[in-house]
Length: 153
Image (cartoon, rainbow, N blue to C red; front, side, top):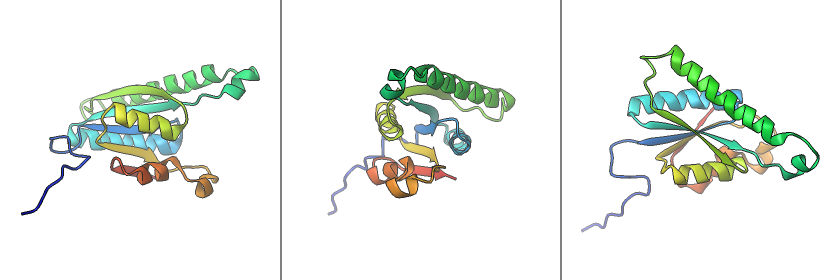
């Protein structure tokens, strides 16, 4: 007799029900959003688009309008997604919602995936050279081992 343990990814359904995609306005993250949108459509899953708004206390102390800039980025991302949805109406009938979390990208995506009960996480590949040494958000999410993670180039 073998003992069976429930998988931490299984929520009693066939296929993912919530797919989280991290976006920051970069080309890589927008490709990830397009990929995740197609995956969500095929799986009839909810696409949770997540923007992690950086909190930069030092920038605010220097008088830089950091919060205004990151709010504008979030609004621009939502506008891009709505525009893409409108252009492909009937083809792209994916249920989606937009969420903003605050903090660094890794911790923000972890918090989002936990709160939204994500079955999968999709992110774009890092476009920053320094991440090859320190480790990108994608690599850290994979190493966390809590959800299937797809990295889109």
